[in-house]
Picture 1 (cartoon, one colour):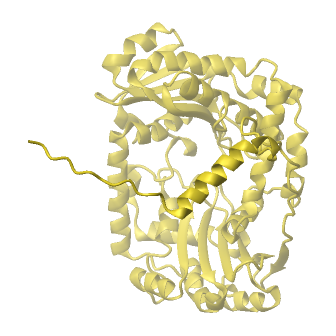
Picture 2: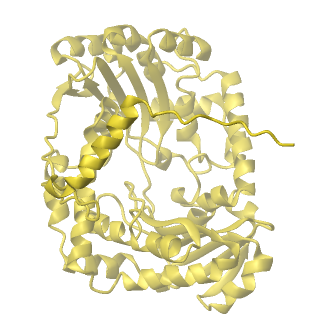
Picture 3: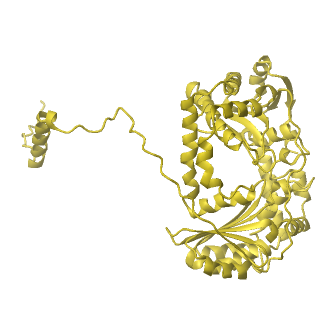
Length: 490
């Protein structure tokens, strides 16, 4: 026999009844209520905000070191960026990786402090200290509360002027870099970063080898090599000190004089890539085998242009359309339309010398051939007249990105330093948007015809050749060469 439990009906709480009444009334009076926003249409765009580029207060220390100060008072922080115009492009022949390693070693012991003591001193001040190097410059960055800036300056001055280049720290960093090279050779996504420039520029040109150097060059470095490079390249005549934040120039400059004024004038000499890179004249295909690779890494391009090119703004707009934004043609094709890749794009890597232009993506192994076809479809289609709406969209995109360069003390310092590194005009940022919007369809056509010539590009593909080689060869893109991974790393 089954016994059922009878649950008595309970009246809803008064608050629920009130809600029900309100809902019923709202429904009955719906025709009398004001309409809400139209959720089916995106809101209309308002006018673009006006960007006011902060003024630079330019001073000079007694030894000739230029100081550029940008005052911002939003937060009590300061950013100090010491820029030395000597990066990996200044590496001596057969000593590739020296500039990068020298920059990395600056805070691994300086003055009377060891690497750990420098780290402890910076942490105690609530600050952040970093060193790094690019192709064209080396940097020492300090982010610090304004109240602790005076205490941090002696530490930074030691790092810049008096690095000790301790043997044990050099050996440690050397081993880290050698390990990174071994890992890169085994990872297609990292290997393509070494393979493409080596194939396009060759082993003798500085841009043909990664900034980290090679295993052979790293093993040969001595403490004396680092000291000589530092003495030759680091000096007030080859440097700039940018300070941004809640600072006063009148009180800051004397403090900087005390910290950096002893830096000897006359040291430092700008150096860079002088040899002209060989340009490709016919399309060639280079395949690198990585058995079992989950994807094929594709990079297509050739020698591009230096940052000083008069076509800078035309190329910025052109590349935004081709592959420089999420909604670019390459990404919308390979990712959105076909699903061959998580992301595809292109870049003009502009340096003081002529850096590379390339289009790139990691694609499904079984879609390597199809992806290559779509790459070349877009590289050819970019030569056709570009609709005005697409041009305007790209120009607006670039113009609206500019304010982020001035959102923080770090961003401001980094942006200002680019004027020094690349010898840009003083009003570069003030005139940036006007020059972007001045790019015409004719400018884009000329730039595409001059700088994007797919019939002369190198096509580098890293993947499982058992699965992709026959299909790639069948495309008849050009002469095919199979390259060993170790050949692009040494």
